[in-house]
Image (tube, rainbow, N blue to C red):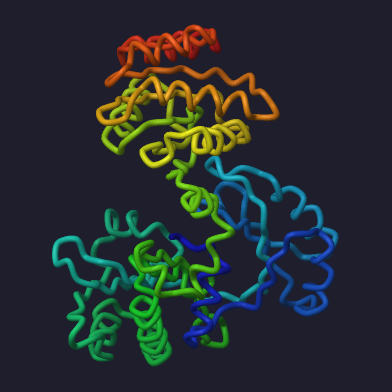
Length: 380
């Protein structure tokens, strides 16, 4: 489970990592209260809370210099879509007097299959860009979990990367605390980018990411409590596996990861993109289909719905019946076209059920994609 920035920072703060003063805003009127607390000098920065990078380039992070400016900016950011994700909450933080920006992260090294510490003096940039364009500016230390993270390993990296001597002690303390977050949360990634040094030489986590292994959530109720704020986690508890892909226009309903990935690739070859996919492997019943369709109908960025089902043990006549029951039970009809392909056990019976209900349905994937292609071309 990926946490929002404000959630990650709250975990950081519990482990002694300095973070900016901040206020999570769900309503415009809360700006005045935040301003009264921060004062004129530290007011402020508005940051869209969405689970994607590139918020600044998309206009989701803005510095404001007055209450009036904050209200205008709040209304501009609230409700906007960043890479297909709607902004529902905004974090208002104190403005920092930044002198320099660094990068600090722990994740799992795929080759060593061990935790790895990553440090760079080039903070505020995508780390992939740093690794590609400035490989000498990225320090790496593979951690033996039995020995933990020794201070000398962090100092060695700081020295080799020419970090200023006056930030070493603070940097080491934050790195050790962040490694504690990584271990205690059973995280797959924890990152501070940028870790800023202010003009009074204080290090503060200006941004943060924390990705926790879903399989370990039951051991971390304090983090699992955030689940209610994530569509993916809410749907999973209803037996529907939803994956947000950031942008695109096709909502996919498939059964199985392999079928889903194949369909996504073929859609991309048509010049379109899957907006999201829902794996129906565990939800092929009227209730599961209804939940899935409600998600796709309510997403304004989903233009087309493509259903691709191949049944082995699952009977396609039961899939067709469940799908129609779900559609009939929905209070509001949708004008979004549903392109259907069902194949496998009892596919002919299932196709007849859907055709009798006046739906176009295909048995071959090629025919299904040609139908989508015609719709895409007609829209141009």
